[in-house]
Length: 305
Image (tube, rainbow, N blue to C red; front, side, top):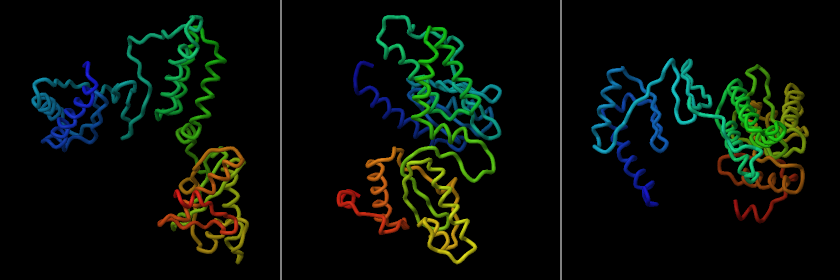
């Protein structure tokens, strides 16, 4: 406390201590060990007696360090601001608030600066979109945030506006976490920008751009392959489809399609596409199948990449 070196020295000390813990005689029981400042999360694979002996062991390592243990109850354990549930060999997360937590934030009617009033809600939404919550846990936390806003006099339309701001920023993360588990071949890729298609059987890659939904553009590549795969045609409007037809290789959109950059149609999008094609063509691993006559080299990219 009181010195800028304190955090660094504390980390050095704890790193040394943790090395002794992990490599000690109880290390075989530690499936997972994660620490944030002075809170430690452990996945333990041992008996109750082993855990008691482990606590006694770590408390014997240094006279100034004292550890305590909080075990899961009914498969649930709070850690920091998370409630972690162990279910079917998976960890499920919810936002955790202590029983003493109140709904009090800076009142909307206060004379505080506007950014200060919304600081708490920016933090709430940032946490909401950056933790892997289930759809149900996400909806539950969103309702709590709106309830807190209502209790402190915030207009709902302003909270919704802030919510959609975060939703637009983290839409890809949201879509991946809450995608439906069905048998469809495609997931929703609703961004405009630069994308890559990776062959499922070799290192061939195609770089493209789209000012429409990228999922639509991906489907067009696949449609050309499906249309001509049982024919002798090997020259379609898609260089990637041509590769699949010529090599009789396969492609899975769920695994092989990737959004590289989100960007509206324009010069910036063209530059980003050109940059990614340059990277792919200079890669010692990838084989870029983009048509050469559709690609104009850029001296800047060639020197930088």
